[in-house]
Length: 174
Image 1 (cartoon, rainbow, N blue to C red):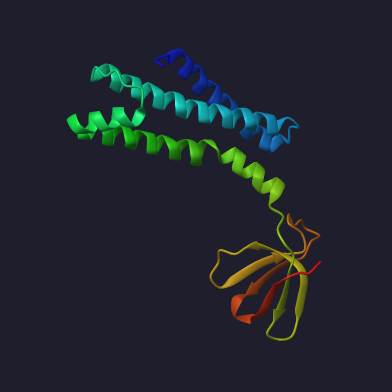
Image 2: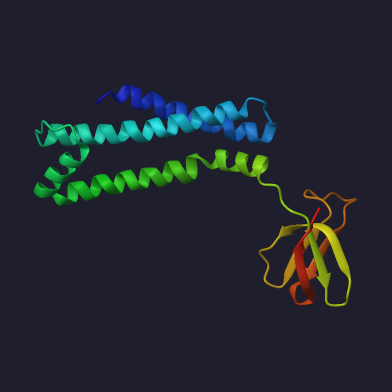
């Protein structure tokens, strides 16, 4: 399969759906799941088409008449090892580029729709109990930020708790 036009069209479609799904995140478009589905299918298609392009180049360069991908790689490995290492490195880098960068809109959509943060009950050393709060930021070493709301506004309570003052922290049973 040596169709560069098809690979270029799939890559262009992949970039367009990435842009649309990133913009749809901010605008809350109702057709965003369909854009994400098309985006994932185009990403997988591009990965497979690019792999087939590399294999067809190996077949042409080494004048092979094999169809099994492992036989091709094994034969080329016997003649020119750096070429096989280069192909595998290119495919691994492409896998992580597509898997991490280009699928970021899918990961954010899943996080918004399927990750429901739990309310926590926090008992402090002085006996004070904060019940039903959300943990907002847990990156600071000394302090924990919690609130009554996931997106706190000016009317919501925002707690900044010293970690040394926390006695018990447990998930709310409700």
